[in-house]
Length: 228
Length: 299
Figure (cartoon, rainbow over the protein chains, first blue to last red):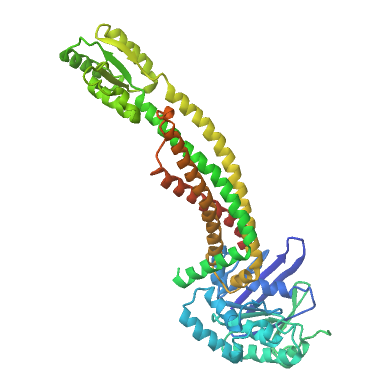
């Protein structure tokens, strides 16, 4: 469960990104975060995986106040949160398999477990046959699936995605969405910032709309609600 | 830490050392120059303290006894002097022992002393060490005054070791300040080398942080990299200093005129110099890597 109480974020350059956010996301939910560019979506997302600290207010992840977590303990917090980006952030010199395995090596998982689990998630994202391809040999959609596999390989409770379909054509975007839905159906909380109107309006889920740093709308099965 | 992880850290460290080979070379050179100066200083410092200790040992008051003196009188004087609280130790050195010591000191030139056993010109002596070496002079005067008949002559070192220690203190301070400056420079160069590595691997580090790699897991390869630079940087100066010192010993040994000027032998000095220099190299290397990674891991 993710809770935000009266959260403000002011950046060092004076930009007020969030101005009093209150929300609660339960385990197993699927949430779209929508809003115009520069409204604070990304900041909202980045606070969840503790890339940023709130200037004011409390963020609880599974009951842990992330602001109070000491720096050296943050990695352990992150192991419970998978993150996916618009630009995939894959290592170009590693194969799909190695990219996913890298996430398990980094948390010092035993070798035998790595092999089994990496093959398992690659199968889940439908890239079992392509595991030895490098990112340059994969399409954008395939690369994003590798990055989702990497985010999921350590079995996190939360999957946080910042515009995961931003660089993809509609067909690939839908593949990614079905995959996220599948992951959500297996019990993982999914929070996804998006600009994709068609997806939000078709796959009806909870929608949180942020404008000028505050939540202006929060409805189950909501619509995208913007013309862009 | 798991063995797989350790292997991984070393592999990563060596990979980036070879990838940024010119920066590695520059950093290793900087460490080398620093450690070369430090190594020379180290050899110098070890010898100074050795010489000072040797000299201190020699700052004994040598009271030459009159040839007419009897064994009983010697025992008497010795026990009287021993009672003086200013005296640390008194020992009797017979003329035969005196000659033997002299032969040892003269080494290869001892043939000059051949045949003196039969007609030993040396006096019997009392060797007296002051409790406080600073008060050797006063003690010497006192002994001279107390035994005008039985003691013919009183000699002592006259503060030679003090002056050497004073001088070496100055030299040491200058070298230390100079060396510290160089060490900072070397650490700075190392931190720049590591920064390049970090730059080359920033995406990897970003992902490692994202998936929850611990800070130490991220740091270790850089630590190893810094240490390897330190160790590599120590090798050249150790070799140069020890070869140079060995050469110096050869020259001094060949020229008999200096044979009183005793330097420490190669062993165990080599071990100390190599050990301390390597350790300092690693220290500088780790310091340099710490500087550059610290800012990067702050959240």
